[in-house]
Image (cartoon, rainbow, N blue to C red):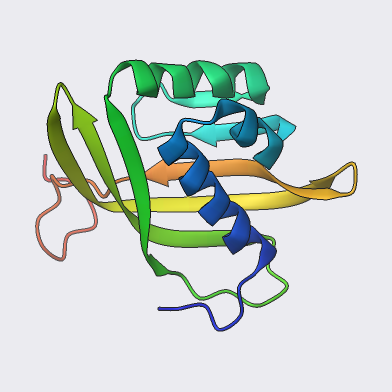
Length: 140
């Protein structure tokens, strides 16, 4: 679903994707609040604040040659929403081999910090592929 009107949150999510691709940590810092929290796709990826945000991105970039997150489709939101959500695709090159990870779900919440809209919360996840079709939970 396309956004009828691009929200500030959607703009920030797009800017984050571009900064991630460029591995531009100073730009990423400009996009996030000082007390942000970020939940990633790995079991230990719960980060709070810019210092931990840096640790997470440095870990990602040490474990890959390059990476890109593309927005596939947007979740429709009202124009005054303080969040954005999208289904994405991640293309990560590891040891010279491109890996494509479909169905990456990305959500951000935003708030003003010193008069500037920034990302205060980000959550990325993949569906649990242990679920059977039409099943809400993994089979035991």
